[in-house]
Image 1: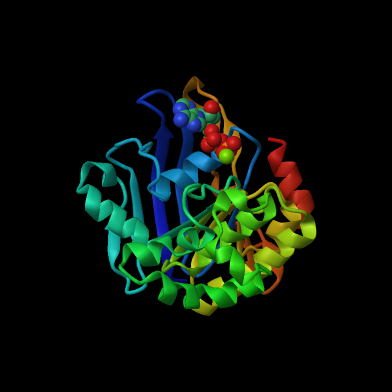
Image 2: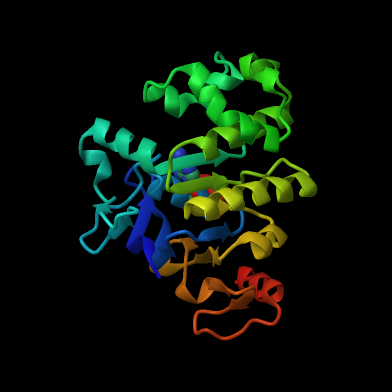
Length: 275
Ligand code: ADP
Ligand code: MG
């Protein structure tokens, strides 16, 4: 398996305070769709914001390493990213990463089109040309072409969610980070958006790390399910990703860390989440 991320002994904290999350060891395969599940407040957003380089929470420990491998197997150590050159960091994020959040984070004073095409506009592509490149995806998501020129404040919540989706999947990227991207959508719409997203990921051999509370969605679309549970190590209660709480989908069947077949993966997940 080609690797997208190799994580060793990652600990996250806010403002040099206590550890809120520990990841002893985790490998994320290139081109894989990973669903991250766990109770509220456990550190799911902290995790994707740390490796997504949105938030500087990685503890600077000697044993910590978070390596990203790009499509040509170029390596980048993400630990210490915030100490380096800011332009380099933005350039890296813009080139390799894309994000979808539950709360869409669209820029309110811009049109839907400017929002959807922002990464192209940054690269100097004219708006009319960028529009051509997103129209087909807009149509797939049942967005009328004329909303392109509307201010996002004039759109409905559902339209804004889909605009954010178009923005994320039509950008240039290798890794998509989704923080409850279908959180406020009904089940049918969530499945439809995930199907479109999954097609996009497979077509471009892209990796996705998606936080979700929806086990059905995870079992249906994920290649790997990563469960975050609480631990009380060092007298602190915080989230942890244990190797035995990572499930792999091989050809439609779910397996545990030792390769054992899970006949009832939903039961397995629910039991583990009770810990
Ligand atoms: P989840 O996404 O799983 O609901 P989070 O990653 O948001 O959980 O939060 C994990 C822990 O980190 C929680 O205890 C939360 O209170 C804490 N936390 C999150 N963001 C901050 C922040 N900006 N400053 C301080 N603590 C935070
Ligand atoms: Mg969260």
